[in-house]
Image (cartoon, rainbow, N blue to C red; front, side):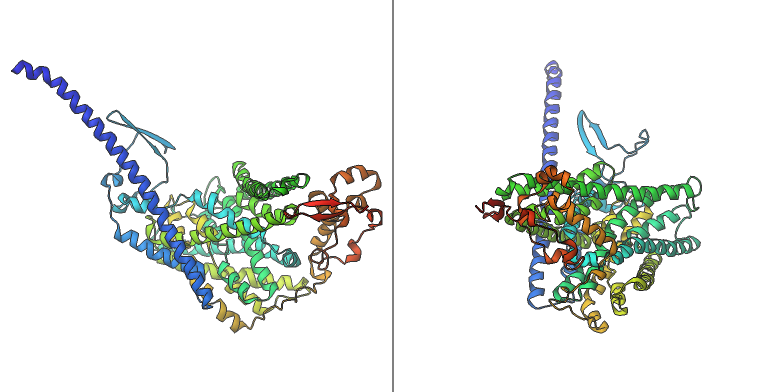
Length: 615
């Protein structure tokens, strides 16, 4: 009997091992199923929040309620959902919160293979967590799933918002105020960044003095970094109310134009400051590092601008095809090439947000004219819809992040200093620059406009995305928490107070035809020079519009001019929207007598240009 048991023990041991392997595989499959289940729950939460937001928007519009914008409502719903997830769910996996020491590893690998009893598991790097932030909530899988990867914001959610801003740009009013918009966007953003950085450095020094911070934890470059990300304005709430109430067109354009270009400038400025590294003392000024950062800023901005514009110009090749006969294919190609501008810029080490912004502006100016009527409608509706969804997802997530983000650092002194710095910086931006601009503007920026622009300096999606992009250290976590609170305050208080402020400042509404009498002198002189070149040469090459190149190029260029000019250009009429507000028609009109007998274009049902013989 004893021999039998001894001979049976190896078989029994093998059987037990096999059963253990089966249990491990079953547990592994179960964990994987739970992972996908939690992913479905996460998507369901955002789907539910968007449904609530859409119903709330309808309710607000139906009752003309303007004291809380849709984005503010989305943040409220996100807050409530985040509160429920934080305190109504519990940690289901204790092991997920356990920290294991790996002294042999000198840096964090992107992929980690772990052998646990001959079963190899693969883990990928997600983010760095400070030791003081490791707590019981780390084991809550739901909270972990609700913490987005920052790359989702920059690669998926932000590009449609920025592209739509460029694609929907109203050229007439934008270029009439081009000089002022560029001043606010570039010089104003730099002023805001420096003022916020200096004020916050003073508060940081006070925090070090009273023992709330260590001297080595927060440097002057960190304060400038915070200043650059908080310089990104996003007055989406104010602009929506302006649009609904038909507020003065110049005020709307100044705010919209500033916010569009300001986002691009703030993103590049944030990156340039992040790579600023003095060789010796981080708090000391290093001329070499400073000029290197300035060079990086100019190079990245110019390169991103060129990348985005180049992709828009590439799409003009559809002019030489019959793709307009297939609107679905035409719309798909337009969308993919526009997205490629963003991805190419990121792959080249540039800024995709800047690239996709100028891609949208250039697409609207050139490629839009080549699209069929169906594709024009589809692209406008497509990007408007994507902008709506992406914007509301971001604001819903802002509400969620207040409770689901696990590494918040609430420092009352830093938060108070940030509020003070943001308001002072906005004042130092708007009032001095408006004074200087009024010295050269024939149509002055009135004082009530300046007050409204000061009031409309809300923070939103860009500031939030820049802050959440890096939360690996305590200073960055403190910045993120503070930025989130500032976004809440400005959207709810300033956004909700827009209508009373308009009434108090007695800002007029624009008449329906008040912008049709714009004179040449009101347009930016630089743009007038550019427009003449663009209208005579670029538009005829890149689109079906504009005067024929045979009338604008020298006579010896006629063979090439006939090849590049669309047949429809010979019958094209000058549009009031393209000429009346910049240059008199007499200055742009060309002698079309040589092409008087040219074929006259018509359009088929898809909007494609065709030729009808006059014979």
